[in-house]
Image (cartoon, rainbow, N blue to C red):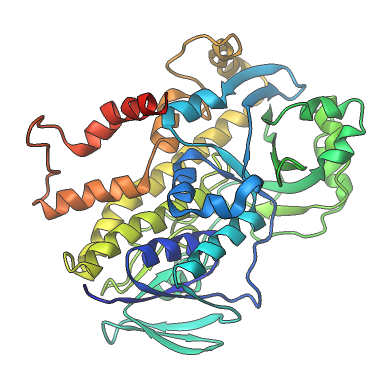
Amino acid sequence: MSPINIGIVGAGIGGLATAIALARAGATVTVLESAAELGEIGAGIQMTPNVSILLKRWGVDKEIGDNLVRFEELNMRRKDGTPVGHTKIATLEKTLNRPWWVVHRAHLHEGLVTVAERLGVKLIVDAAVTALEYAKNQSVTVTSRKGTFVFDFVVGADGINSVTRKSLFPDVAPEPPTTNCAYRAIVPYEQIRKDPVARELIEKKTMEVWMADNAYIITYPICAGTMFNLVLSHHRPEKLRATQHDVPIHELHNEYKDFDPRIKRVVDMIDSTSRWPLMVTGPLKSWSSPRKNVVLTGDAAHSMVNHMAQGAATAMEDGAFLGKCIAKVVEGKLRLDEAVDIYEKERMPKAFAKQQVSFLNGAIWHLPDGPAQQARDAVMAPELQGQYYVKSSNLYGDPKTVLDVYGYDAEQHADTALAALLNGGREPVDANTGIAKSLEDEFINWFQAEKAKL
């Protein structure tokens, strides 16, 4: 075993997930967080099946408990509320053998902190990083508000305004690709129940999407089903590059005045909100320093628009994959630079694909009324009758997208890539069947798992 001392810059959702994965790999892990207290701002977040499997595997789900909410169905709608598409979530979950959760960011963060600390991760707050020296030696010297640290390896998980990225690539800056931005808000279920029109929306736990010209609303339950979370997409006259707090509430109310009366009543219950920019980073040519002793993850490397709910999920995948790579370093089977190379080779295309599918879903949801919108709605229509289909413009239920995005397992991907690397570049195959494990998992083991549950 080769001990390795790793520093992580940033204790957000991605940084904590990375800390857990690296600690599980056998590394000594220290996380430097700039905030004076640990915590997470914002509202709800989707833990789609590609990351719910990580929460279960790591035991984070048990810490969060009932605050991880499962919903029954996804309903796609026109702006006026007319049903367009439908996904039965139980069917998706059964096929993938994993849940689709929604949760408040604060509850998710608390669960990650608890598991990280249990694994021995050292969390240091009020430790804003001001400089990194990674070129002179193989070790990395990190200067922070809490003093100077020396690590064998540093992970920059410090988000959209990453100090780590600025140190590695000073000319790279995240940019809003369009004038699209989003409001976020939470309304108590109890308040909605008192409204004779709006309460129809909460008769059961659902995810709802209202699509409109250059706007949409997506809603789902959080906080053990006591809070109604809203993300409200819209466009501004100019690009937004920083969060605007205390937005005049009439701006939000007016933006959605022509929507379905049920959701309009809920929107009118919102008494304060912030406007969030949608910033995109990259794709970058590299995520690492020349010596491979510093590497980026999450929004520091590949921030994306929010239309597939994959920003935090992709950061968590990065951490999970990197953890498997570092485990081989700890075991003495790989050098650190080899581990970083395979991480970049495999994860960079995956992150780019997530950025692309997020753009695509935004384009689909924002279509103006007309031929394209009518075609979109027509190909979703079979979902409303529960008919069989092989392709849909509802990417949350489209079979291929579900398998590619939600059926992905970052740790399984890492195991496959590492097995191939250590086998001379080709994945090993079973001596009896001749089948590679990754293909066996994809085509056989999934239904074997289903049979085991019967």
